[in-house]
Structures are given as C-alpha cells and as structure tokens.
Length: 374
Image 1 (cartoon, rainbow, N blue to C red):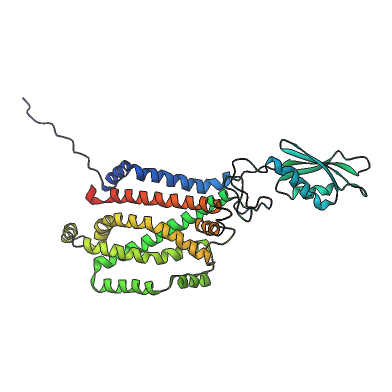
Image 2: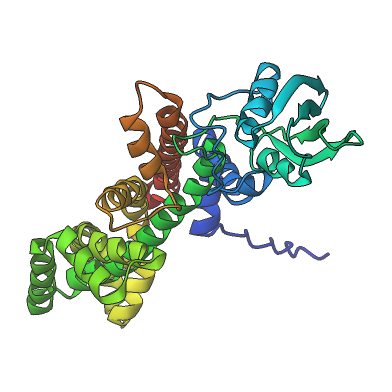
C-alpha cells in the first residue's frame, strides 16, 4: 500500500501592490473620486472640441449673455438685430420675416440701384450667415435680403468679452490640471529623493543638504519666478518647472522626517546586516514605506499649485490671454460677481469638485498603501 501523502500546492502570496489595489477598490469614495477625475480629465481634453466654439472666439453680439439651454438668438432678437446690422447701409427697410432658421427683410433705395455688396453688413454679424440679395426689381432700386440664422448655444453663458464660458472653463481645466499634476510630479521626484537621502545618510551630509533647503526657503518665490521669466521668457513649461522647483522643499522636509523614524526600524537593520547597499535599502525599504505620507501630501499640493498659478497669472507672470485657467476665470468672476454670478460659480464648481475628489482619492490611497493596514 502506498501511504504517501499528496504534496500540497504552494499558496500564492499577494504582493504589496496587489493588496493595496484590493483595499483601494473596497473604498467606494476613493473609487468614485477616481472615476470623477478621469471623466473630468476627458471632458477637459475632448470637451472644447464638442462645444462648437473656440476658446478664444469672440461673439460681439453675445456679450454677457446668461446661461441658457435654448439656442441663441431667441425669437424676439432676430428682427431687431437684422435691422440694426443694416442701419449703416442707409437704405429704406421694410418688415422682417422670420421663417425657421432663415430671415428676410425688404430693402429699397431712392437714388441708386442696390449694390449686392450690402450683404456684407449682415454677414459681419454673429447672428447671420450666407446673406444674399434676392427678388431684385428691374430698376434695381428694391429687393429683399435673405440670410440664414446662425444659432449657437451658450450653456454657461458668455464672459464680458463675448467668449463661450463653457469652452473656456473646459480649456482652463487642461491648463490647471496639467500645471498642478506636472509641478507636483517634479516636486515629488526632487523632494522624495533629496529628503530620503538626507535622512538616511544623516551626519554631515544631512546637515549640508538641509541647510541648502533652508537657503532656498529664504529666497522670495516671486523673485525667483521673475528671474526665470527674465532669463527664459514666459511660457507654459516654465510655469510648472518654476512651481515644482520650489514646492519640493516641503516635500523634502516631510520625507526626511519620515526617513529618520524608518531607518532605525528592525527591517532596515536586518537589511543592513544582510549586506544590502544604501541605495537598495532606500529603494526597497525606505521609499515604499513613504508612499502613504507622500500621496497624502500630493493631494494637498495639487490645489496649492493651482492657487499659486492663479496668483502668478494675476501678477502677469503666468497664463496670459487668450489662454486661461480655473484660477484666472475665478479671479475674473470675483470682479463681476454682482452682475454675472455664473462667471464665478461655474469655474469655482469645477475647481472645488476636482479638489474634493483629489482629497477623497488621497485618503483612499493613504489607507490602501499603508503597510500597517495589510
């Protein structure tokens, strides 16, 4: 008889990353925030191409119009606008007839025949297109001008210049999110590396590296940005480089403090006893245990970077017209809040909801990446 026992299959272990992903999926608030942020990013990337407006297109006939689900122009605006466009032509105008998406008006002249070029007065308006002179009398002194009514939608209304606020809000999201994320990544890359190395090496290296941080802290941020603008000019890439090159200082201090507490732990001492190099300890033991605090600080740094960008744009050192950002739109809306509250509420709602989603996602990532919760 064979009494040999079957060999049990080895139990597959779960990596730290897979275990963290499982805990993150169980956090409904974090997953909902992640979905919202993905949808917001897609809306900011694709949305400006679907609104039917360019972010810098100026509609002189639609300045400060309120938000509306109905297309402009409204029924009662077509006739007065058509008469107003032909007022400079010095013609005798008859009644205006509106039939669906077309409008016509009888015109006549007492002294000279009608010139077909008078249709240019109508085509200059944002309300009409494809203007033409029809039913011209044999003597050329009377006829009708027909034009297609150009209907447009302004779901968020327009700004004081006559630009579509929805398109500009979505386009501003591109700028704000890009600057916020790229500057945060630059700050994280420099700050984590600098702080982890300084905290782990300690001694003279730690003292020298942190004194450099203190010196950079003493430099005025605005003065630093002005120097960059003078030497390299004003451009979009400079924005996140300038902000990220300064915001890494806080990250370095946070990471250094966490590293000082981690390097005396048992698992670090065991790695040193096994002959693991300093670079290997930093890569495999120190930095992975720093992910939780770093992620939480990143969620706070993104809105801070967006606010800094708004401040620089207000001083004329950041995003310039016709480009815009959420901070610039909010600053413009704050000045016109009495007459146009939507100019402030719409971009503020986009910014606030995005920052809340980042905070919820950061809390979820902190819980998921905490080794103590494994």
